[in-house]
Length: 515
Image (cartoon, rainbow, N blue to C red):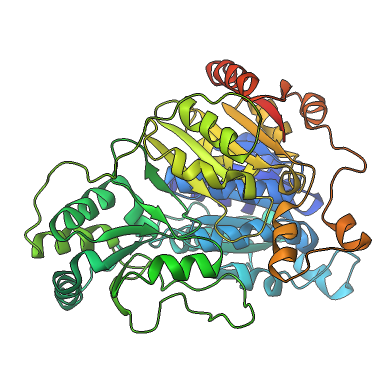
């Protein structure tokens, strides 16, 4: 077999089932080999950012990597923004990037570039293949590196002659190390902190701690000590709804985050790093841990946060008990005008059980998180790295990973335009994705930031650079052009009616919400 088939058969042996691809000339041997390795599903993305974002969404829900296949440095560069998000989500992703033939690199052809330099900032592991005979062992190492807890981005750069040349057979899968178990001392220190501070303490959850078993242990701890449960502002994956303990989300703006955390005298980090502000603002600190507040690390993101929480619960003598929840009102269907509150309420009221919500709704989506606390059990994904254009691709990948679950892409209009090609992939693959486009015809977050900077009367250019209404973007027409059925709604009643219909229909659909 040639190097391309050797690569794919090794990937299959290591558990790879999907390849999100936007190939070019140098990847043609891999395109041909995908027909010989029929067990790997090939999913075409019309833009590389769709491929990388879909691989992220797939990894978050499947708990294992998919391949991405991109063409040379420029193609890989098109996908970097969503690899930045995948790195922040700590998702296992394996990128295969085609390169010029080894003997052609010195010619410096127009598409030649330093791919490794592009890959390093968004990858935890990078390698350039040197020979067709090592392709199999190289991809095996890439997959194993990506699978290390809590997950990493691996990038393998493969010259075209290493794909068409004679391969070295199939390499055996490599053992992925188990996550490091936290030391007893960390558990005891965290227990002492919670015993002392009790309801003046918070557990800050991240990574695997936000899964069902991690939340169950955190619930035991909160019932025993009275501590508060808080998660990262943009959680990679959080189980939510009526059967799970109430978890507050750290606010985005630093003033609000500092206000929330100011009532605590201690914070225990469980699978999360200490919180910091997203941007530097005048007269505001980088660290969001208030002065005088103790910070204790129970588990880093690289450690086994779930077993750490379970050990902490045992150390505290915390038994299983009822789910600790603040009193919540079951969401009701809203009526009247469409705004961020009624949109969030409508979605919260109609969430189907066991659905997946990918939230990139930006400012419009803020009320949804609180409104859906008592909704049917669901999985919540968010924009981990802040690089917009993640929502539609991530929802696409989640739907590939979980074909039996309804996926809801809760999407802002401005960021949706970065990767709207994902709709075409959803239609082609028949994916069960319902997209809600919050069309307020503006970059609302930038208008908020202008106001926060003291610019109460933006000038003509500032208004122009934050407005999307000239010309108007007609999302339902864009969706229809890509094969996705779509409707427009202008009232809360219409939204509820169309959302209920859309969630019951197989395949993709889109609702454009005019705000």
